Image (cartoon, rainbow, N blue to C red; front, side, top):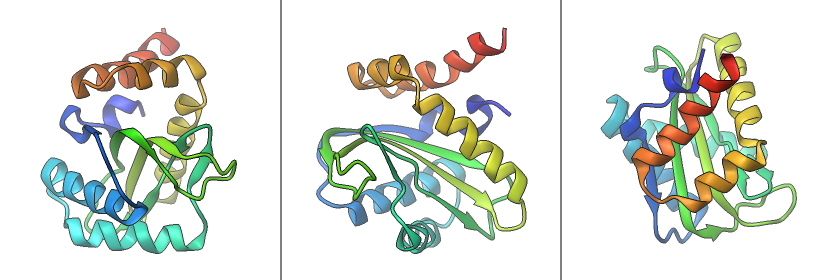
Length: 154
């Protein structure tokens, strides 16, 4: 499994202003619908429900929201770069500007965990995060995310 398998190029977006976590989840749901043909409302509800169990802001300006959906056949990723950081109740109390969401099938626990570990490892790399923050073009951001893993695998 690679980030290129999880994240379609059109599932990457830069947003200039987002006013709340709920609005961010709506943006993620719209991308899930537009990119993967998933029920956007179901994705929004699942992300909000999962967030209710505990914040997915992991620190250093990064959030990794994730949820399970019955209609998903394989793990799917969505990446949003926020130009204006958002209060996300992160563990370090810092606002979030890099959001990598995962939507996984309800029945596949192992793939969901592997994908979450892969995304987490990638987003812990300060060089990758610096490049992501320095670029606003979705195509460039997708390349940064997917290219890095190709180099690590070589």
